[in-house]
Image 1 (spheres, rainbow, N blue to C red):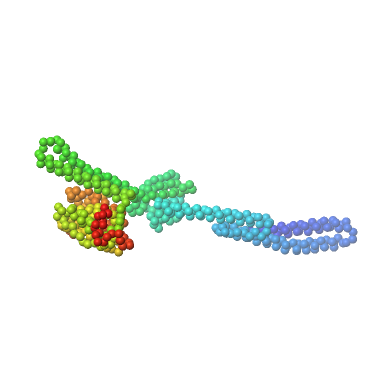
Image 2: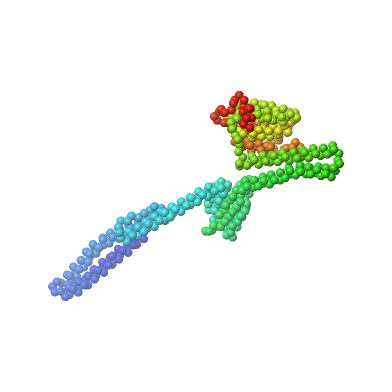
Length: 476
């Protein structure tokens, strides 16, 4: 381009000089025809040589001027190429105040504005990407031809390395509901909703897919696994409560109707019926109390009156307070020792925990004739345990016995008056203290329930080491 400009400028300049020389010679010839003296031939020759000299002087000047213009145009072309390649920091020097300098200043200003615009766009893009990455929902953008345009960090964690820009969505995810929603949006340009259950194992997502203004689709996936689990737990809880209440109510209703229809019944029969009614009423009262206790420990407003207590004091107080429970059971409670390490605990809550665990051990481990209660010190916590020597629990039940209303043997549990809520209450209380609970068992060798409480640091000073059990009782 610059070579063509140079050639044209130089040719135009030469043409002008030739035209000037010819014009000067014609004018000069007319002039000398009316002038006496000098030879016409001599004057023409002088004019010719004068024109050649002028041409010889004009050519270098023209070449120099065209060279400067060509060099500046070369810089403009190089500047334009750098801008086209994305280098928005390129600028042109402005050596003068001619027309080209004005053009160079305008180009510099354009490049600066482009740089500012692209920097602002990039800043907004990064801000939007950060916002989308911080969302709990998974987000993926799809091009009109079904390829992944962009996905946030949550979507990448769910789909793994399979999902990346430029890869077809059908090769990145295998959930048919998600693919159907995206296909519907791309085809009909309208929102689609669905539920994805095979995108990630054990997780359920609600899908909201919408068309993008420039074409393509945007899919947002909201994880509703916990909501589904909570809803399922609520339904199961209502069903279990209804079942647990219906059984004693039906029994009470039947026996009361019998007594009402036969007011002159045998006194022994009446006493027997009233005994059954009392038993079922007691069972309903126990169920109601356990439901209220469970609702209390599961509530966000549940607060513990925790205080530093020695582990040995907790074990000793549990044995003394619950000793009356074993009078008619034929089971003996034995202390298995406990350290003096202080732990943060609510005395009333601990009494409820040990009460439920010991009662459970007496009911289902009665054949073992004894229950061990004790604790041992670990590096940062104390582990308490209640162990019976009854028939034990099969391993497949150990992970579920802390669920509400879960029973290993439903018939035997109902006969013994159990509600299926005791261990669930224990678990919530222990976790509210910052501890953990688990069950260990072998068939025929009994069950050991073990839970931990964090050790208090520094060493407890407020509790009198000489009478730990009395200190605990005074806090109640």
